[in-house]
Length: 623
Image (cartoon, rainbow, N blue to C red; front, side, top):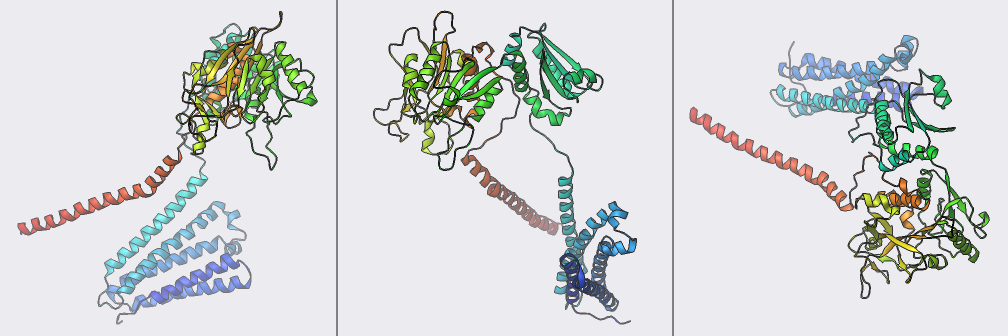
């Protein structure tokens, strides 16, 4: 049989690819009907016909070209095998096997569904590269088989990379495996929780329901062992297995392990932690906070705190459309509830204009924008005179509350304060200078935790006014300026956030604790007056210093200052970047990283290029 050079096989490869495309349109786009049958049948005919034609071309090709033809024919055959695998798991296979392959052999169906596109990719990518390489040598006297082989390997390598990438992504999305590399440690008993235990006057039972040798149970047990040291006679800690002692568990309302129950008498407070350490991490990091909340619920009497309403005070609900949005105090109320407080509303409908309820442990006024009625002010003054507890948080655009503050020896200065040296940045604008930040605290019990932290938890006062002490003070009234502004703070009379002539810098009083004796036989009057209501608003209260200020203020007002103290937490602190840092990271990753790779590659290439001539010169010298 004579052999002769033949032309390029690229046109027939295009016919082969068109056949595959026709099958795809018929099966995936049409999906059913005559159109599918025609296109799929035509596609199969074109693909098989191209393979047969390529086989005849192989027989008549020259010896050097036969190597390339054999490679191309093998790729054609691989594509036909992929088509066969597709049809086996399609409705054609349903007709052959008497039912869907997904029901007869579900694992095999999944394998075929993933294998046939991988084989098609391993056909088309190498086929394209081999045809381009061989077409460039179609009229050459001798075919460079090495060039075609390199193109084949390059195409296969590229196809393998794509298949591996898709397989890796699929496994990563389907495999339920996570790696938590964050810092983790169970919280230890904090100062405030230890004080609660030391203040017990009746036995308190803590029951831990965990199976033996459970990692979460061991962590919880260690926490309560550390806590029991404070009052070993009154705090009884017992560990049980719910499966072994189901009767005890039912009596405490527990039906699964992984639960802590704090009980005294008929009062029971459960805390579900869980059994798996990965799922219980968050609860263990906040364990001291959660345990303290339940200890207070069973060990201390429940107190009622009233929030005044009806004067534009901060509320939990969002403002109606058209109103200027103002931060609510829902987080403050939730914080008080965690301290075993019953939060209630107090307006004219609840009797604010007549008399403060007898069960009020404290009355809170947060950011009113409208004046109180004379009857309401008289009720607040009467409440204070009989040993009541007032918590006033005012703001520059609201009433000055002169009728209530004057008997307490105070006056509210409504001029906003600003500081161009120490402030909280929020918008990166000059107006941020009105977001005061301070760590200047007295030793008053209402700031016990802040004083203990020694400046590590500054308090934010966005848009604050200032308090002024009346001179002389009313008889027997005692003041303690518990929180002062930073010494560089000035009264910004014109609102330009810049110190102008006449605007002196000083450590303005921001929070004043007031105490004055009441008539014989009654508890003394206590009041805390804040020059900024935003310091208790949502968002700002997430700042640790503001939260401690709120909690310790409540405890002092209600006479529980002995329980004031820090709460232990091991929660991760989120890493936050400024806008400038985010921009720097963006440009570093987008431009600097690739630039370093290019520079290293350039240096390596230059060194390699310099070594090659030297090696050639050395070889010439040896010859």
